[in-house]
Image (cartoon, rainbow, N blue to C red; front, side, top):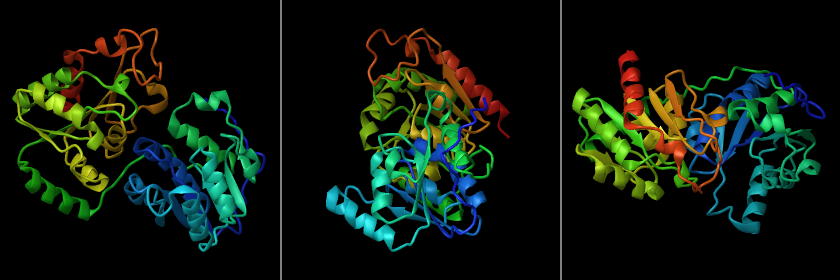
Length: 356
C-alpha cells in the first residue's frame, strides 16, 4: 500500500553534520525502527548519528551498524523528574546537534529536543506536539494501521530520507560468542545439544499469553524427538510465566527469567535453533537474529507487529473479537483457546526441518 505521506517540509540533505534520533522505549519497537534508522544513515552518510534510548533497549541500537553512538536516557536515575530532563537537555545541547528525528511519539521527546536547542525537530504530529516540531508529519488513520516497520519508514521518508529497505538483521560480534560460552557454563547448558528458546511472558498483559501447559507440551515433544535442551527467557516480571511452564513440563527446562541483561539474552537467543514465543520483544529479537521463530498471537495484531525475518511463522486465529488489543480478555479467550499444541508443534517441526 502506497500511502504517499508528506511532511510540511523536508529536512535538507546538506549542512547536517550531527543527527540525534530519539529511539523508542520497548525492545520490539526498537527492532521495528531499525529500517528507519538505516534510511536516516543513508540520507546523511557522513553525519555523526546518535541515538537517545533508555538503558534497557540500548543494546539493540548498539547492534545496528547505522548508529555511531547510543546516549543513555537514564530514567530512573540521573534524568528522572523535571530536573533530570533539564539536565539531559543540557547534556544534549553540548553535542551541537543539527537535527533531531523523533521516532518516539511522546510530547516529552519534542520538549527535550527544543530545550536542547536543536534547530530542526522532526516527527509525527502526535500527542499534541505539532507546534514544537519544525518538520511535522501528519499521522493519519491509514498510517496507524500498517506494520510498525512501515509506520516508522513512512515518517522518515516523508521528511526526505532515502529508503534503505525494510529488512532487519542483527549481527552480534565475537564478544557475544564469548558471553554465550560463559552463560552456557553458568546455567549448566550442554554446548553439544541443540537449544530451544521459549518466551512465555508478555509485558502488556495476560491476553497476549498462550497457555503454560501448552508451551510445556510442545517443548516436551520437541525435546523427546530432537534431543534438544529447553531454555525459558524473560525479565524478572515474567518469572511467574516461566515458572508455570517449567512446572508443567516433564523435561527439564532451564529458567533464566530475570537472570540476564539484554545483551546476555541476545547472546543466548543467537545460539537457539528454534524460538517459541508470544508477541513480545524477544520474539522480535529472535526474528531479527534470523532464528527460526514460532510467534503466537492472540489479542494483538500480526498485521502491525508480526516478527521480522524470513524464518518466522505467525500462528493467529482470526476470531471475530481479535485483535482487541486489550491486556485482559473480557470474554472466553477464544483467540488463544483455538491454538492447540499440535498446530504449534507442527509449525516448529517444519521450521526445524527447513533449517540448514
